[in-house]
Image 1 (spheres, rainbow over the protein chains, first blue to last red):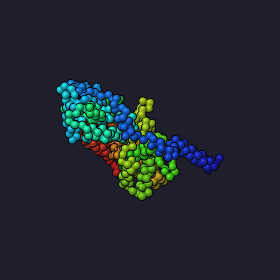
Image 2: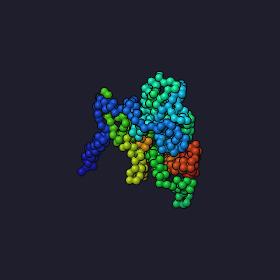
Image 3: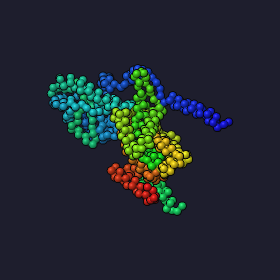
Image 4: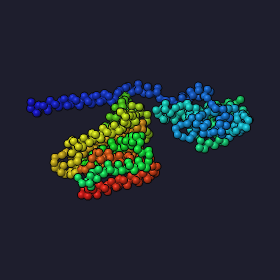
Length: 214
Length: 322
């Protein structure tokens, strides 16, 4: 068979194989969906940090295990390292440990950014309940309400803190502040951060989660 | 072959061997399997880029855009995988599989490389200038594509490329071995490989011999772009995120690996395996300096001197080249 004829026969086969290859590649590379369906599904699956924070406060907060505040302080004084390692929560390799504490206390004073309290026990230490500047991840980390490994998007994880802090600022602190007076007996449950390198135990600041005037 | 010629031929391997011995003596953590795999994983991206850079430098060119192309290709792959493409006018969403996203990233890398080659051959823009322009264009495109934010959460299948193990070896190392093997075969045993050397050795002679110089050069830059994209996909997968500033100054590490590996900046002389050795020297040096707790500032200075010494040795050994 002449070479020219051979080449002419080969060409369609070559193009067919290339087209086949491209077809197979494209078939395995992309898929199609109506955009409306996609957007509807996306809306459903979008993480709502406000709803997550709300559900936590309404359903899980009351039952959230907490350490008695006086025991907490005593244990920190006795063996800071061991206590924080055993009972605290922390994120990554930080020296910050987080705890949920609760207790009964008497209001000593109402300041611009805090309410000073004294625990309802003998030789009680003074503590501060934060009423302003509720920022950071103290509540999220102390409560263990969310695990970073469960979130593909770190923005979602960070937004949980933003949402829960906002709830505390808007729903928990204002009703308490409008009624509380010096000398009131109260019950509190809140989150606290302790840095093992700079513990500053005389000046611990509790971010409140439950505040009840007795 | 006398001793001097042998030493010159194997200078990269000798340097690597001496470096390993010295570092093993200075740090007991250096000669461990974990550190060995770490070095291999870390150099895999540089090797991929440097293979492309070797081809470019062999033609007496240079490609300063590989770091930016790496970033853009990685970002495109990540964006396609995570967000797909919306076409509201057709009420159509085009989703991409992991394979599709990788293909998309590689096509973008190849396209940008092709553009580099076209600028250099069609408009006679010097490679330094054309690829410097592409460095800025691709970096800007990456910023536009990502909006300046990382694209994260790409899924475990995509992450396998950069973090997975296959037959007892990390995936990036497998990919690098395949890339190097193909490049070695292409440069040693194909017409295209010979043409690349011929162009770098004497472009006029190659043209007079009937070679289509422009076509070969365009292919070389396209390949450099494709290999930068491969590096970008490995990096994006390893980090599970496409960072807008990924690959910053990778072109310099790549040029360093090529030069240390004995490829002449004047073109026409060098080898892929030499480049692999150059990348290994840089990787081993980086790892050793970290293990020895040397300040990152000193690390840069030391690396700079190593590159200088490599170039000086090259000039001393080949005094008659331009």
